[in-house]
Structure formats: C-alpha cells, structure tokens
Length: 305
Image: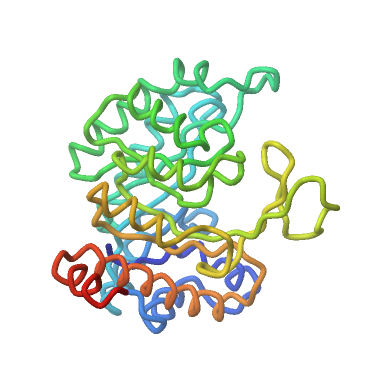
C-alpha cells in the first residue's frame, strides 16, 4: 500500500486563509506525500472547471505529486432536480474532469436520504440508483477510470449495505472506496465493515475517531451523533480508538495494494495533525508490509517478536 493525502484534510486551514488552495500541493509534498486526492474543485463564479483542473494538474506535475483520485459529490436520489439519470450525466462530466487531472479513480456518492423522511430503506434506493450508477461505471471504463462509492451517508454507511450496492450495480469497473472509520457513524464494528468491503476495495480513506457512549452528556462542539445516539469526533490518525494494525492486515489479506488517502477531520491544528498522521500512516503500512513478507515474518517468529 502507498500513502496518499486528501486535499480535504487541509480544508480547515484553507477556510481560515492559512493556506491557498494551490499551495496545498507543495505543502503535502513537504510533509512527505507523493500522491494526492481531490474532492470537488474550487471553481470561481463564472469559471471553467476544466481550466481549474488543468492548473491543478500542472501544479502537481511541478512538485512531482501524483493525482490518484478525484471524489466529487453526488446524490442519485435528490441531485440534478431529483433525476437519477441527469445526475449520472453530471457525474460523467466529472469523469472528464478526472481525465484532465490524470486521476485513475473517481469516487461519486450514491444517495443520502429520500425526500420523504419516513422512507429510509436502502433497498428502495437501490431500485432507483443502481442502473444510473452502472451507466457511470460503463462511461468510466471507456476512459480507463475506475468508479466507486464510499461507505458514508447513513443509508449506505455499513459494510453490508455497500456490498449489496456493488452486487446490484454489477459492473467490473465499479467498487468501493473503503473508509476505515465511517461505520462508526452507524454503530457498526469498523473491522467488520472493512472485512466485508475489502474484496471490492478500489481505494481507501484512513481516518481516526474518538467515541463516547450516548448515555454520557453531550461533549459539545465538534462531536457528531451516530445513528443510535452515540458520540464521535474525528482526530489525528493513529491517536483515536480504531484498530489500525488489524485494519491494514484485513486489507492486505484481501490483496489490496493501492493508495490509502489520509483524511483529517479533527479539531487539532491542521498542519500539525497531518504531519503526525503521515508518520503514523506510513508506520502502520511499513509494519504491515514487513509482517506480510514471508521471509521477514519467519525471522520475526524466530526472534519471538
């Protein structure tokens, strides 16, 4: 596995005007990242997204940072005037943006909720969104760009539901962006979720959380509430409660050997948090690589380590 960073991790500093968007790229390189992921691009009013993409691609080339993933927002239930097929056409244009960026993976969202709050079942959503998503996967395949969705959005946040989505879409070019922590938001075991999704994994988001039971008083600003009322807060990767060694072992055993994008969603100071998270991320990946090497593992056994 190889380390990557989502530009999204720098957004707290970007919103505070502590860094300009284009300077995220050299900052990521300075910290140690050779690969980056972008979410929706910041296009000025009246601007052309393709021109922005060309400038970002040139900036990344200047600093020898590979763009491996592009992750635009989507909603196949309520987006594009509630027309799933119109939303599919919009995302196909985002795949064109990914092609300009040079990314070889596009993560698009699936569905967040029904307009009628009483309808929450993902099985109802599958009937509406599967065919349009399959058309996006077909278009991505024609461009040599993999398409995928992430386990987030409550309705599609658990590993089992994401597996069902991939099986119903049923296209070789469509898989899962496995976020190793998002199952917490629906009170599912993160390790179980990763294990279910790992065979379909096309990209990984690495993040970490603090968790407090729902019967505690509300911890205050910065804490979210899970589906069943527990509290969670993003923190520096490697400093929260997630079981990272076992998570990476599951991914390795599933033969995943792609990029892992760091996502920072905590309240700690942005640059400090990303620097520490980079060290932790590379450490876990190096440890897993060493243990998965038969010769190194044999030596460790001999040393009883």
